[in-house]
Length: 189
Image 1 (cartoon, rainbow, N blue to C red):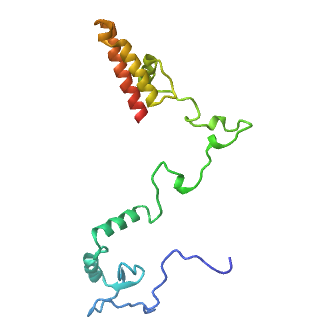
Image 2 (image 1 turned 45 degrees about the horizontal axis):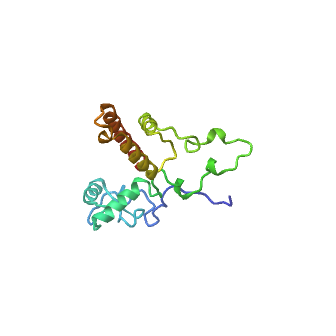
Image 3 (image 1 turned 30 degrees about the vertical axis):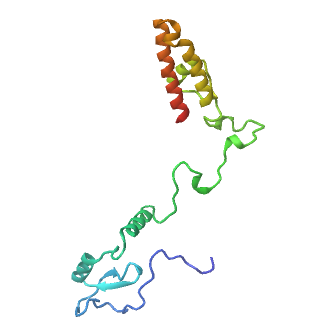
């Protein structure tokens, strides 16, 4: 560097007397002002110097948020909880930066085969979905239209009225209804 130094503390108060005694800034007080207190919310590095008694009084009366509306206070508190740094919702584009997606890279030598996520592998449905798919004789990829068409066909085939009140057909009809609901919920969510 060219003779420059970084300072990680506020600059010294140049208006302060350079001797050992700094008078208290409270009107009429002649004690030593050893304790500093910010002058305002907008000038946090500009200080009053008080004695112990007057700095305690000043601190009791100090309200950083005085004169602000509740919405402004809430905004400032939220901004300060992340140390006044930008944030973004979890699960989004890593803060707006592009990230390497192994599925979008042409991998001629197979370097990324182990890194491929679950989307690249065949989707394995939960056991309840697997049973519902087997019962309705369906498999993924599945659309809502295909599911409804298969449901209508199976309902016509296994409806108790079409089978003269057969108990086995009635039970299968109930299972088809449950399987349809499971798959419909899986497709919706």
